[in-house]
Length: 158
Image 1: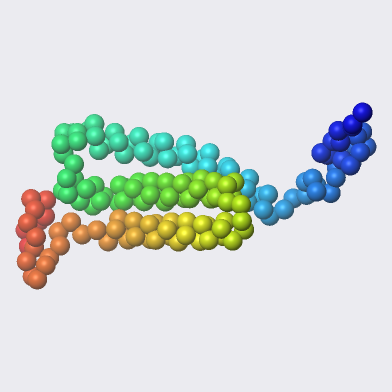
Image 2: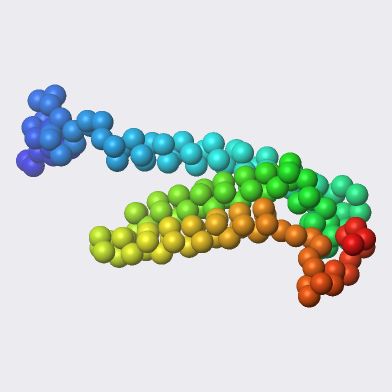
């Protein structure tokens, strides 16, 4: 008769945890717990941000027919909407990056592959967050090109 040993110990019924299953507090474990918690909390906040975004953009006023350059320019003239869109951008990117990081950890078998996939992921995330943040805060709805203001009914007279 073959006996099956418990993964928690070297011998059945010894009550001791084998060293490879030791549950000491490590920084890696804490990071994964914080990442797990971040996914849940950011998901809840993202649901509110996204549905608020869809409601304002698609249902209020003239609905989808009102969305154009002037609509976005008007929204981003208000710091509230700049912060709203910034929070949506940052949370969505960090939430998605954390999810893809988890997939890479689960499915990339070689350490070198896992490392380079994460480098590409983090670089792409940083570029998108930086460019998106710059666009939100440096957006100028009434640009002047060669001393001539571009046309648009939403820009004040020069």
